[in-house]
Length: 281
Image 1: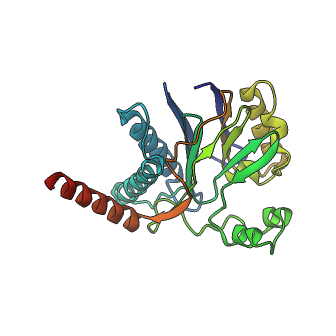
Image 2: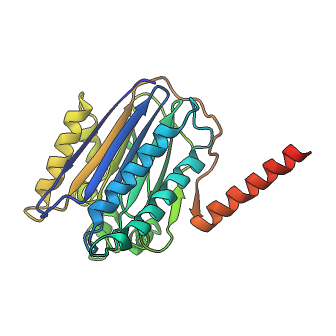
Image 3: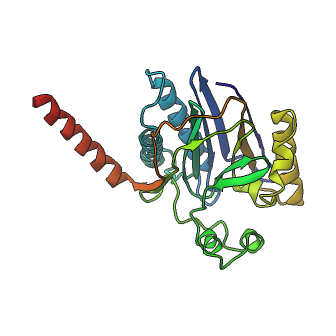
């Protein structure tokens, strides 16, 4: 695989940094994960850290060269992190309710797959044009998607950060992307709301298009922080620029979907039962 990646985080004007970001690489794949701990609940940074640890551990435990079911892997990783966060909170002294957003992206064989919960985003750019971005789990972004609010109005809305879903709370719904074939120069950006709140989608390519991706990402974080004018949230991002040949569709995730924990485990039970039946025959 031929790519470059970068990550960074700035504390902004908050007393602590509750964002976490991590990148793990292997010969045939790379995984990026980002969590934004909820500031309204104690232990947000702990929840975001647990998310990153669970995701990186799951990625490194894969023994096969290729993850044959990327959507299943991403969903399983996120649900495992969610349950770990929920179990951890009551055991802490004093007990806490740590919560975090989540966005995870897997790149392998020239294809990208991602999943998210909350309002940390993934942007996909090609030739400085936005190809796709995740939809925030908020009422405000739903109104934007329906055309009721413009992008500018949505960014300025007072309820833009009121989440409908997160990890550590009620069982979340994970939104999974379809398989996305990458072309040379494509860039993927994962970022917390501290980054996207002040940077328009058409501004971001100016930073990501710099010759050195790490320098461009650093400039992006600094610009986002400065525009908050002394009231900056934590600002965190990870980026990957694809430099290989055009990927070839592998058909591993033909369409995007949303999945609850219950549906995920029931699906696993059905597959296990079908496998046992096949072996008996």
